[in-house]
Image 1 (cartoon, one colour):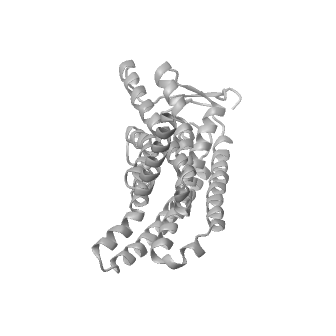
Image 2 (cartoon, rainbow, N blue to C red):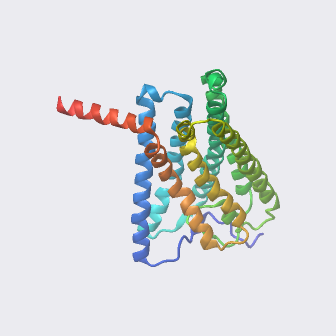
Image 3 (tube, rainbow, N blue to C red):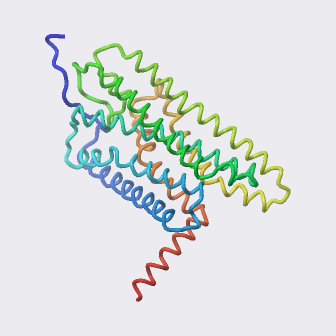
Length: 311
């Protein structure tokens, strides 16, 4: 170890493309990033402004928008800078920050989506007791637990990764500091880290997914008990947006975890690109385009703005 130099920065290889393709990627990522910020900020503002949206369902949606805002901003600015300036280096501290934010926000979103599925389960399967079961105290507790667990386990994973000595190659084969890509550069045994990553995946990905699946099986059974087709359609529409969001989030995440040992690094990069950039942009579109109350709140805000401008 005496003759080894410990790295103070990493080189993010990203996608091996020419300057023109890099510039094109910059434009694509920039548009996606702006759309993500605009859409999630709009949902957040609408939920805050419209009293009709001050319900548990939209309270959870508001926190999902906050998560997606943070998620998109945790590394996209650095990616944009790298694509535009062709500067691929990142400091050790900045790399650790990226890992921590990514893990924290991803783990929190896993739990928050589970909480949202529980909310839909109670609303459809126990409508008469909904206000009693899902009261504001319960809502605040569930959201707070989601954030706290995300912060704690994100810090634990990041701490275990950054305690390792990085004294050899410093090229991270990714466009951001992915924890698995960074662990490959450690000049020490990473068995404990991999065990912890597997454990966290089970408790934050597999278990929540199973709970969501159980919730929607009960919801499906409740919908099938409704005799009228119109009633079934209206009931299902109350949870269709969340179901689509869950499908995108967990589908991509599970595919990444299952394919991490078999798929190529290039395929992993493409999946990460979708997971980190596309999902935060799609979530507000899903909830705004498929939700009449959100669209109604948007119309109200636009009418108020038009009225103020006319006066």
